[in-house]
Length: 355
Image (cartoon, rainbow, N blue to C red):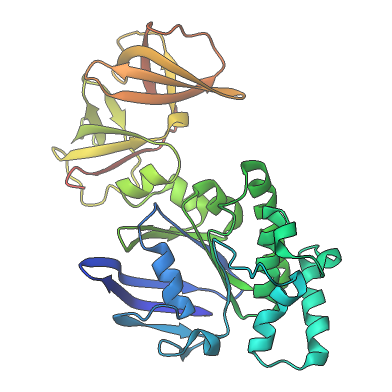
């Protein structure tokens, strides 16, 4: 095990930013902390880096307790959201800064700096001032500075958030290739689920200072542990229903009397008669002509959102709830009546209504 976080807790005044936080990273793993703004993910990263001290819990790296060590003695690499570059220094001097703090020999500096800049394809920019660089180039200088010290663990706090969309997408692909190619253990922080999915071996979803679920992108999307994860990871429809077992298998009765089969995974402990929240992805639903089938929810076509080969239809049901259905391109007229039902083999997740 490379990094172990055991029961971390951090309070700022009356606000508990991180609570009972336990997580493990394997050597060479690239993991992302994913969650909404203010959920505690940056605080968790700063606790690992040593910029904050936990009120409780322990941080172990390669089996050694580093909880009380200063950031310098931990030796981790850190890339900040703001890049934290020195505008009055050259690219070379910025990248060499951490090496000088480690008291590396002058004879080593050139080799290590050039090696780090070569990894991020900036060898020709050694003498430039950082003000002369684009946002993407500054981001790569910050990454080179973190890599120059050859860190055993790389921490990245939303380093791509200042880039435009197209550059951000291209850069994160390059970033994953670089990190995996070097075999570095890395922990990345973002609120962007697409970024998390593109970069990560595993994703740790946070909310309100707590770790909600850890898994591969596929596991989080297909088998969310709770309503928050289901709603935050990907698009999801949230409905209310009542569990029934008309034929010995659990189903959910929705408003309008529609009866939908449910995904048997995650229904442990849920009994018929229980009020539940129902989560279903837009691509797991289909639009059909109103035909009074037992699984149909009838509504009115609202907005149509173009998504390339697919169209997202917003259908307003009789009780005022709007559901999103992703379908092939078709010409359903706005205001027309339509029925919604689960596709064959759809994943219909249910959770206790108390959540």
